[in-house]
Image (cartoon, rainbow, N blue to C red):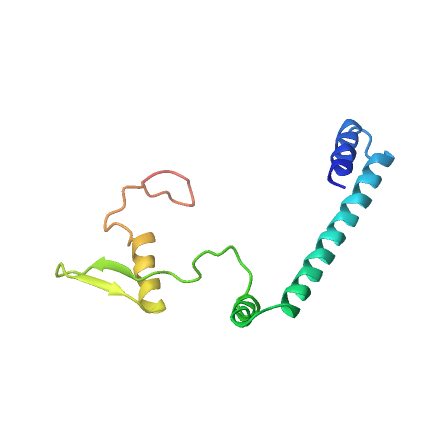
Length: 127
């Protein structure tokens, strides 16, 4: 089926200037069929694996079922460190502390004296 899809993709590419050409519809049908076949095979394999599992495999199955899918990245922000006013290192471990550390680092306070010239809204001239 893969070679057939490859051929259909090439054919659809060759007729890319003709969006209503039958090659595009044929390709879409075959891709949908392939997708359904992959999904059916995955489901069949999962059921077969569950039926044939041994002792410790039950815990692996539990892990697969109980963990939500994702990209396997970290779902939490690790502990953050910052230097306090007295020079000590302060560790932020709670979400509130971490959000405060990130806010201070990403959004520092504005300078005391602005270097941007003031513009009046009435005339548009710099004072």
